[in-house]
Amino acid sequence: MTARKNGAAEARKAVWFITGCSTGFGRMLARSPLARGDSVAVTARDPESIADIASMGDALVLKLDVTDQGQIVAAAKAAEHRFGHIDVLVNNAGIGYFAAVEESEEAQVRRMFEINMFGLGRLIKATLPSMRKAGRGFIVNFSSIGGLRSCPALGYYNATKFAVEGLSGALRLEVAPFGIKVMLIEPRGFRTD
Image 1 (cartoon, one colour):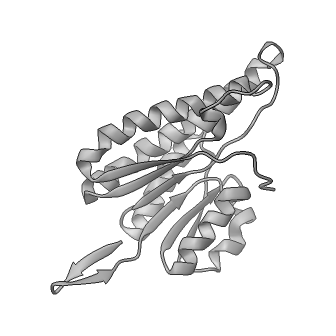
Image 2 (cartoon, rainbow, N blue to C red; image 1 turned 60 degrees about the vertical axis):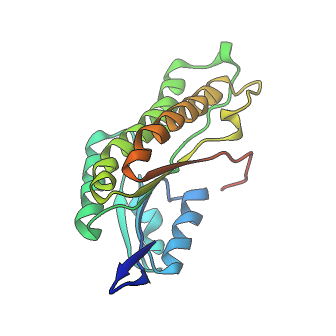
Image 3 (cartoon, rainbow, N blue to C red; image 1 turned 180 degrees about the vertical axis):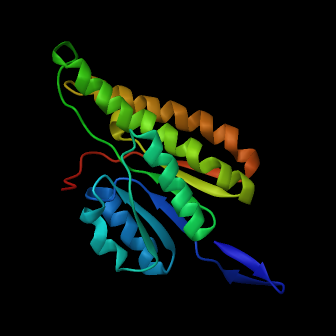
C-alpha cells in the first residue's frame, strides 16, 4: 500500500485480518505480512495456539470461531480499535468432510457449511464497513480446486466451495465501485498440518 505525503509516494503499513491461523495456510500467511512490517489481526479458536506469532511483529492475537457471530463482531471491532481500519481480510478458516453424498451425516455437513461458507460471509459483512469508509480494501477468500471441479466422496465439500465461488463473484461486482477488490484462492490438495 502506498500513501501520498508532500507529493511523494510513501509506503504505508497494511492492516491484515486473517482467519484460521492455528495451522496450515493461515499460520504461514500471517508470517509474511508481519515480516514486511505490516500489522496483522491473527485469529484462531484457541489463541494460545498462535501466541508465538505475536512475537513476530505488530500482531493482535484474537479468539475467533467463525461460527460465533458475537466473536466475529468482537474480533472485527478489536482489530479496528487497535489498528484504526482493516485493509485486507483473508477468509482462510475452513474444514473438510469426506463422505459419499448418500452416506454423509447432516450434522457434519451443516457444520462444514457454517464454517466454510456462512462464517466467511459473516466476516465479510463485519469488515466491509471499514473498507468502504476507507475507499479501499482487499478480500481474499479461500476456495479450492474443489470449487471448480467435483470429486467422488467430496460432494458436500465441493458444494461449500462452489458456494464460496458464487458468493465471491457477486461480491467482486458489488464492491468494485468502492475501491475494494476480491480474490479467490483455489489450491489443490496440500499437506497443511
